[in-house]
Image (cartoon, rainbow, N blue to C red; front, side, top):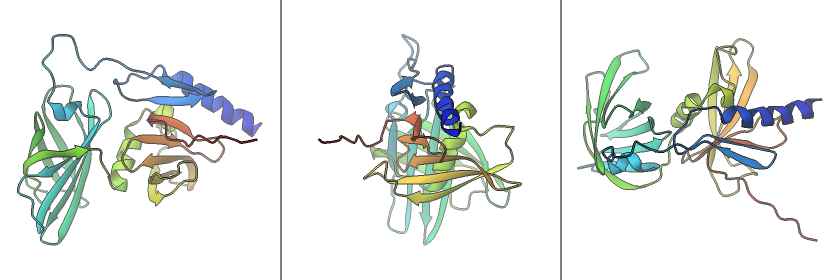
Amino acid sequence: MRKFASRLFMLLLAVLIARVESSEIEYGAVAGGARVEVRVSEGLAGAAPRPLLLRRESATCVRRGSTEISNALLALKRLSSELLLFELKLCERGEEEDICGIVDIAAGDEVEYTGADSGGTGYTLNFKFENEMVIIGSSEGVIIAPDGVYEYLEDGVRVKESAAVKLVESLPPVLTGLNSYNRPYTLTAEWSELPEFPGINWYQLTALHTPDSSIIAEFAVAVDLSSVYRIDTDLPEPVLIFGQERMAVVTSVG
């Protein structure tokens, strides 16, 4: 009965995903061996092209003038045509700070992010995208100011676990199983090598229902944010819910 329920979940997941509004990139699931995707165009015909940095699937940028004692890296991962996940890694004379969040880029090439540090002090970050660079400004409240011009360095990102958590929390509840009915919950993350995905580094996330510590769902998030799988123990196999298929293809001989 449990095996039947898990296969039914996979089938329902594939059906539900076709109803999720998405960008040209990303939401998908595997059910019955079939890949289900939703793709829409990036913009209306005749619209002004977005800065190249916003058209990349993911990118790493470095702050202009970075040195060994004062430097900053910016990781960008496009979640959809509207949402952009960012991670700032800041270092200033031996002190380090990481800032991670999601901004809405649908309205234009200048966006604002409002956050708070661990003590509850609020701050604002301003992003202005221009072709292959982004200008960042900040208000008071940030421990290490990220202000400066960040220039494109390379495609791809390698993020910390906080960005993996942000990505999972941004996905539709029909895919993650995280919704108002099972709140409050916590998401824990640890680095992992999974046998199903040889040669790829992952963060293994576990969603725990806070009152009783029961497991709601489990996820594998690639450190480059290229893929997210549901890896619940009662599923017959991992289920892709975001990004690229990364499971190893096993061929039997004989």
